Structures are given as C-alpha cells and as structure tokens.
Image (cartoon, rainbow, N blue to C red; front, side, top):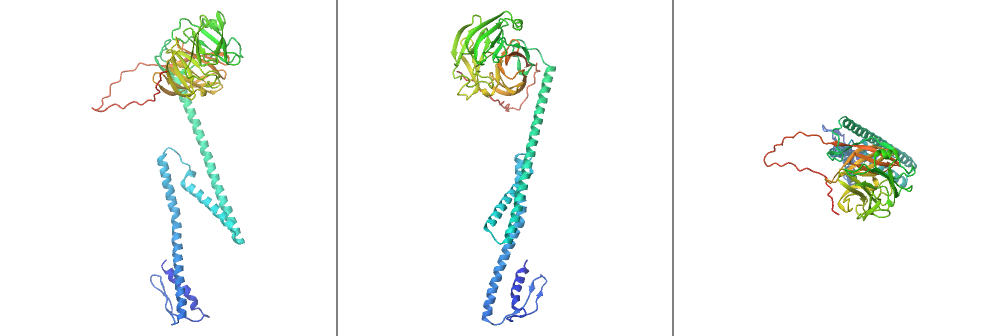
Length: 498
C-alpha cells in the first residue's frame, strides 16, 4: 500500500505535461525500483504563480492521502467486525451452556441470530429515513428495491424464529406427556407389587403402619333412603377406634344441599342393607354435610353460625353448642363443588378433629384436635393447602389426607399432613368414583374404610396402609474421633396452642 500516494501524486501532476497544454514543467522518463515504487523526475520552472499552484496541488494531495488512509482503516474495521461478532456470540453461547448445562438451546436463541435481527431492524429504519429524505428517480427506485429486500429478509427471519419456537413447544408437550405416562407406569408397578405382597393384616384401630398406600375399588351399597334428589349428605360408621356397637348412620340433606334435618341409625350392616330395625330422628338445625359420629355422639355445624354442635344419638338431644374460634361460616371457604362445608368434622384413632379455614389463614386449611367431651380446641395446625381448591379431606391416625378432582370419575389423594411431626408431603393415590361429587367423607378406624356420600349413593372404599416390616439391626458406623454425624433436614410446621 505504500506506492499508492506517490502514484496519486503523479496522476495529479499528469495534466501539467499532457500534449496540447502549456508546458509549465518538463518531465524525464520515470522508472520503478526493486520495491515497486514509482520514481519520476520533474523540472519545475522558476515561476512564482506556478509555485503557488503547485503548493495548492500538494495540499490537495495530502488531503486525499489522509482521506484514503481513513477509508482504508474503516475498511479494515469492517473486515474484522464479523469475526469479533462471531467470537462474542460463541462466548455468550458458552456462558449460557455453562449456566444451564441440561437445557437444549435453540439455534434461534443464539446471540448471533439476535444480532442479525437487530441489524435488519436498523437497516429498515435507515431505508425508511432515506426514502423520506427523497432524491432523484433512479436513486428512489434503487432505494425502494433495497427496502423491499430488507423487509423480506426480516419476515423470513421472523418466520424461522416462530416455527422454531412452535416446534420447541410441541417437543416440550410431548416430553411432559411421556413423563406423565412414566409416572403412571411407576405408580401401577408399585400398586401391583404391593398387591402381591400386602404384608400383615392391620388390626382394628391400629396405627402400626407407615401411611396410606392405596384405595380399593368403590363398593356402591345403595341409594339413600330419601331418594335421588337428595344428592348432598353424609353417612358412615362410628369413627371411634373401639366402638361399643357397630352403629351405622345416614344423614341426607334437604334438596337445597344445605339444611340437615333428618337422620337414620342402623344397629348393623345387614339392617342398613335391608332397611329394617332403624331409628329415624328429626333434628332441624344442622348446616352442610361435614358431620360425623364419634362415640355415639353426632358432631356438626350449627345452622348459620360457626358453632360446633353435639347431639346424643341415644336420645336425639343437643347436649353442647360451642363456637369454633376464628372459623368462617355461611359458605365462605367450603370445599370445591361441595357448598356449606365450612366446618368439617372427622374422627380417627387419635380422637375427634375439625377441619376448617379462617380469615387469618387466608382460606388455607386449618386442623384442630378437639376434646370430644367439651369441644375445646386442644391443638391447632396450619397447612399450605387452600381449602376451596380441595374436593374433600379426612383424618387417619392423626394424618390429614386431602383430595382433589381429576375428572368426573376420578379423584386423587395428593396431600398429607402429619400432625405428630408437623411435616407435609405429596402423594398420588387414585380414587375412582361412580358419580361426579363426593359430599361427605368419613373414615372408620375399626374396619379401615372410607364412607363416602356420592351424589345420593352410599359408597365405601377399603384402605390399604403400608404396614411396618421387621428390620434387621444395622451395625453402627464408626466415625473418626471428633467427627459428628450431619444433621437431618426436615420441613416442619409447628402446631399452635389455641
């Protein structure tokens, strides 16, 4: 690039020696040396006017040389810019992969792709600006063609990105479906293994197990005695762990699904099936289907209040009425699809419980253990589950089990809260149903069954618990002197005293 300024100087001096022009200078033959530099000899006359012209000419030459070198440096910068951009894009991609090694990145999320998109947007703005400034017809036609090409390129780029994102979304959905099928296969395999090896039978009223394992098929006993129009209600067996009698009770609500006024008592299962030897009582002040029977007393929500009511079944006498502190009522936080279940009673091996929600808990389910004689709250636990999002709940061995609807024919026991440890965990135990809504759900420790009032029909389920297996003693692990065992981490939800 060194001979160019000299060549440029020679070309500028050439008009001074051309034929037909006044011979202001006299030239000699030029030659090129070994390095390729052009050498020429010019004899200048001793003329002040000519020297001034030559001085101006030399200044012009220097300006042109400066512009030439400036344009040359800019060209070099443009030549190196794509390489720098590519290296920068590769570096950003490596950083992204190092932060998320398990994520498959899309080629259209690449920094170079984003840079190309930004450059096309800048070209569109520049073309629009030049078109607005105007010009001659030829330049306007060329500018219009250029603007059309840039617009087409931008549309093509957008279509590529959109199609790529759609394909990634479809792939993600397929992966989620496959993961769901895999989870279902694992659950079926576990259930099959547990059915092959059920373990020792669980004694009546015993909690010698590790929690609920599965729910059997629904057994439809019959339609409630008041008819199909009475879709809401509850039924079950005395939920005390050692009842004095095998008492069964059925309590359909009125057609409005709220008012609890009649109930029947049956002394045996055969009497319930054959509709004989029953006692029918009228009460007239119950609210909703959250009632239960524990030790020959029925517990329910008193109509239009947050009061707990206790009735002696031997005489149909209201023996106690007491407000539940902080509990909402009048359908404020009922179960999903089951109105008027603000206060839900439950009995199990550990005693009498009440499930409800408060304004302070923001509608989340609250569990309280009651003194079944005085209805005083002895201990309270707060869960993380929003009560109106649940379809129902029950207690077994001091563990709360919550359900949610998967479809009109299936429920899932998905959540458990152990009041003994304050720990919560998630499950996936399926429960089939004959009709859409489960109204009253009651557990009996004596036979380990769930008694469910399913849109007017009396249904029960056998529950299978994971029984404890004898374990061989494990030898103590010897640790070096001064080394302690690492602490165990657990999630705790401490109970609160009322």
